[in-house]
Image 1 (cartoon, rainbow, N blue to C red):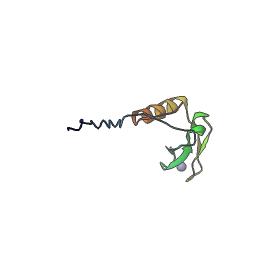
Image 2 (cartoon, rainbow, N blue to C red; image 1 turned 90 degrees about the vertical axis):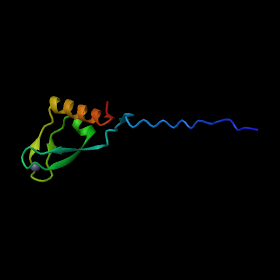
Image 3 (cartoon, rainbow, N blue to C red; image 1 turned 180 degrees about the horizontal axis):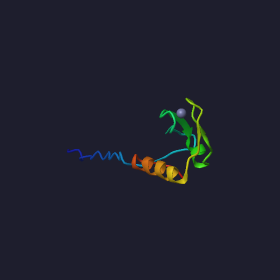
Image 4 (cartoon, rainbow, N blue to C red; image 1 turned 180 degrees about the vertical axis):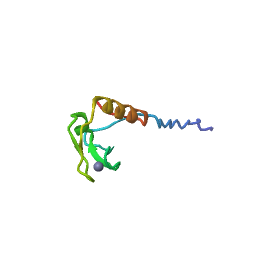
Amino acid sequence: MSQPLRSKDQHEHPGVSTILSGQVMVPICCDHCRRETDVSLQQLKAQHPILCEHCYEVRTFSDTELKLTRMLLANAGFHFA
Ligand SMILES: [Zn+2]
């Protein structure tokens, strides 16, 4: 009696993209003090002004920056709608 060979197909896909929820915090670098403030994706998408928690500089997140962030996250395997 021979046992059938069982192939253990455990294909891991490290490149599988993850959908990020709006609650995910993204570190945004401050133009003024160069430190990072965590801002939620939801807030970024809505392009609310971002208040730096270090120097209280207010900045807005432009369309270009939003696209750039989207691209960077996509490269890292993260996507958001
Ligand atoms: Zn700052």
